[in-house]
Length: 178
Image 1 (cartoon, rainbow, N blue to C red):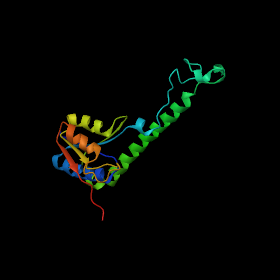
Image 2 (cartoon, rainbow, N blue to C red):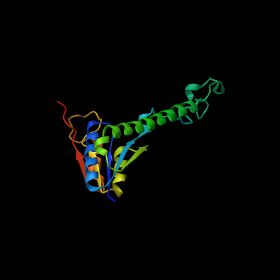
Image 3 (tube, one colour):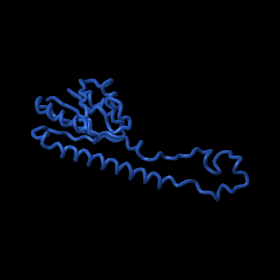
Image 4 (cartoon, one colour):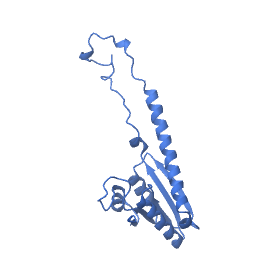
Protein backbone atom coordinates (compact mmCIF):
# COMPACT_ATOMS: atom_id res chain seq x y z
CA UNK A 1 0.00 0.00 0.00
CA UNK A 2 1.21 3.51 -0.77
CA UNK A 3 2.43 5.77 2.03
CA UNK A 4 2.34 9.55 2.09
CA UNK A 5 4.32 11.39 4.77
CA UNK A 6 3.35 14.91 5.78
CA UNK A 7 5.35 17.14 8.13
CA UNK A 8 3.43 19.15 10.69
CA UNK A 9 4.54 22.03 12.93
CA UNK A 10 1.31 23.99 13.68
CA UNK A 11 2.07 26.67 11.09
CA UNK A 12 -0.59 27.63 8.57
CA UNK A 13 1.62 26.16 5.84
CA UNK A 14 1.80 22.77 7.51
CA UNK A 15 -1.96 22.75 8.11
CA UNK A 16 -2.50 23.45 4.39
CA UNK A 17 -0.02 20.65 3.63
CA UNK A 18 -1.99 18.27 5.89
CA UNK A 19 -5.26 19.10 4.12
CA UNK A 20 -3.65 18.62 0.70
CA UNK A 21 -1.95 15.36 1.74
CA UNK A 22 -5.25 14.02 3.13
CA UNK A 23 -6.94 14.55 -0.23
CA UNK A 24 -4.03 12.91 -2.03
CA UNK A 25 -4.05 9.95 0.38
CA UNK A 26 -7.76 9.44 -0.21
CA UNK A 27 -7.28 9.64 -4.00
CA UNK A 28 -4.41 7.13 -3.94
CA UNK A 29 -5.87 4.98 -1.15
CA UNK A 30 -2.62 5.52 0.73
CA UNK A 31 -1.74 5.52 4.40
CA UNK A 32 -1.10 9.06 5.61
CA UNK A 33 1.76 9.31 8.09
CA UNK A 34 1.61 12.64 9.93
CA UNK A 35 5.01 13.50 11.44
CA UNK A 36 5.73 16.10 14.10
CA UNK A 37 9.45 16.26 14.82
CA UNK A 38 11.25 18.49 17.27
CA UNK A 39 14.55 18.75 19.02
CA UNK A 40 13.80 19.10 22.75
CA UNK A 41 17.43 19.41 23.70
CA UNK A 42 17.70 22.53 21.55
CA UNK A 43 14.55 23.96 23.13
CA UNK A 44 15.71 23.44 26.71
CA UNK A 45 18.40 25.52 28.35
CA UNK A 46 21.84 24.10 27.69
CA UNK A 47 23.43 21.93 30.33
CA UNK A 48 26.40 23.36 32.14
CA UNK A 49 28.99 20.69 32.70
CA UNK A 50 32.16 22.27 34.08
CA UNK A 51 35.58 20.96 33.26
CA UNK A 52 38.00 19.94 35.99
CA UNK A 53 39.56 23.39 35.67
CA UNK A 54 36.24 25.12 36.27
CA UNK A 55 35.63 23.43 39.62
CA UNK A 56 37.20 24.72 42.79
CA UNK A 57 39.94 22.33 43.82
CA UNK A 58 40.03 20.62 40.42
CA UNK A 59 43.21 21.31 38.54
CA UNK A 60 45.34 24.40 39.02
CA UNK A 61 43.51 27.71 39.40
CA UNK A 62 45.81 30.50 40.56
CA UNK A 63 42.84 32.84 41.09
CA UNK A 64 41.70 30.63 43.95
CA UNK A 65 44.99 30.68 45.86
CA UNK A 66 44.26 30.98 49.54
CA UNK A 67 40.67 29.65 49.33
CA UNK A 68 39.69 26.45 51.06
CA UNK A 69 38.67 24.28 48.11
CA UNK A 70 36.96 21.74 50.35
CA UNK A 71 34.64 24.44 51.72
CA UNK A 72 33.19 25.19 48.27
CA UNK A 73 30.82 22.50 47.01
CA UNK A 74 30.80 21.27 43.44
CA UNK A 75 27.63 22.29 41.55
CA UNK A 76 24.62 19.99 42.02
CA UNK A 77 23.88 18.74 38.51
CA UNK A 78 20.99 16.49 39.56
CA UNK A 79 18.53 19.40 39.90
CA UNK A 80 19.55 20.78 36.50
CA UNK A 81 19.17 17.38 34.86
CA UNK A 82 15.77 16.81 36.52
CA UNK A 83 14.55 20.21 35.26
CA UNK A 84 15.80 19.37 31.79
CA UNK A 85 14.09 15.97 31.85
CA UNK A 86 10.81 17.58 32.94
CA UNK A 87 11.11 20.15 30.16
CA UNK A 88 11.76 17.48 27.53
CA UNK A 89 8.72 15.49 28.76
CA UNK A 90 6.60 18.64 28.59
CA UNK A 91 7.83 19.23 25.02
CA UNK A 92 6.88 15.65 24.05
CA UNK A 93 3.40 16.04 25.57
CA UNK A 94 2.91 19.40 23.84
CA UNK A 95 3.97 17.88 20.51
CA UNK A 96 1.50 15.03 20.91
CA UNK A 97 -1.30 17.44 21.83
CA UNK A 98 -0.46 19.69 18.89
CA UNK A 99 -0.56 16.75 16.52
CA UNK A 100 -3.89 15.60 17.94
CA UNK A 101 -5.33 19.11 17.68
CA UNK A 102 -4.25 19.50 14.06
CA UNK A 103 -5.76 16.14 13.15
CA UNK A 104 -8.99 17.07 14.91
CA UNK A 105 -9.15 20.38 12.97
CA UNK A 106 -8.79 18.42 9.72
CA UNK A 107 -11.14 15.58 10.73
CA UNK A 108 -13.47 16.19 7.76
CA UNK A 109 -10.57 16.15 5.29
CA UNK A 110 -9.18 13.02 6.96
CA UNK A 111 -12.47 11.11 6.90
CA UNK A 112 -11.88 7.70 5.32
CA UNK A 113 -8.06 8.07 5.36
CA UNK A 114 -5.88 5.72 7.40
CA UNK A 115 -3.72 8.03 9.54
CA UNK A 116 -0.54 7.16 11.43
CA UNK A 117 0.51 9.70 14.07
CA UNK A 118 4.25 9.98 14.62
CA UNK A 119 6.02 12.22 17.13
CA UNK A 120 9.79 12.19 16.78
CA UNK A 121 11.82 13.85 19.50
CA UNK A 122 15.47 14.75 19.59
CA UNK A 123 15.67 15.02 15.82
CA UNK A 124 15.76 18.10 13.69
CA UNK A 125 12.50 18.16 11.68
CA UNK A 126 14.32 18.21 8.33
CA UNK A 127 16.45 15.22 9.29
CA UNK A 128 13.41 13.28 10.53
CA UNK A 129 11.40 13.98 7.37
CA UNK A 130 14.28 13.11 5.04
CA UNK A 131 14.65 9.80 6.89
CA UNK A 132 10.88 9.21 6.65
CA UNK A 133 11.12 9.77 2.89
CA UNK A 134 13.24 6.62 2.54
CA UNK A 135 10.21 4.36 2.48
CA UNK A 136 7.53 6.84 1.46
CA UNK A 137 5.89 7.28 -1.92
CA UNK A 138 5.41 11.01 -1.39
CA UNK A 139 6.54 13.63 1.14
CA UNK A 140 4.37 16.71 1.69
CA UNK A 141 5.45 19.84 3.59
CA UNK A 142 4.30 23.41 3.93
CA UNK A 143 6.37 26.07 2.25
CA UNK A 144 7.29 27.78 5.49
CA UNK A 145 7.17 26.90 9.15
CA UNK A 146 7.10 29.14 12.15
CA UNK A 147 10.54 30.69 11.58
CA UNK A 148 11.14 34.40 11.68
CA UNK A 149 12.07 35.10 8.04
CA UNK A 150 8.63 35.73 6.57
CA UNK A 151 10.01 37.07 3.27
CA UNK A 152 11.54 33.70 2.35
CA UNK A 153 9.57 31.57 -0.09
CA UNK A 154 10.82 28.34 1.48
CA UNK A 155 11.63 27.74 5.10
CA UNK A 156 14.72 25.82 6.16
CA UNK A 157 12.90 22.49 6.63
CA UNK A 158 11.04 22.59 3.31
CA UNK A 159 14.26 23.65 1.57
CA UNK A 160 16.19 20.75 3.14
CA UNK A 161 13.61 18.09 2.25
CA UNK A 162 13.37 19.32 -1.34
CA UNK A 163 17.15 18.95 -1.59
CA UNK A 164 17.59 15.63 0.24
CA UNK A 165 14.40 13.54 0.25
CA UNK A 166 14.56 10.21 -1.52
CA UNK A 167 10.99 10.35 -2.82
CA UNK A 168 8.96 13.00 -4.66
CA UNK A 169 8.19 16.10 -2.56
CA UNK A 170 5.19 18.41 -2.74
CA UNK A 171 5.55 21.84 -1.13
CA UNK A 172 2.15 23.37 -0.34
CA UNK A 173 2.09 27.15 0.10
CA UNK A 174 0.24 28.65 3.05
CA UNK A 175 -2.99 30.42 2.28
CA UNK A 176 -2.55 34.17 2.25
CA UNK A 177 -4.49 36.01 4.90
CA UNK A 178 -6.50 39.05 3.83
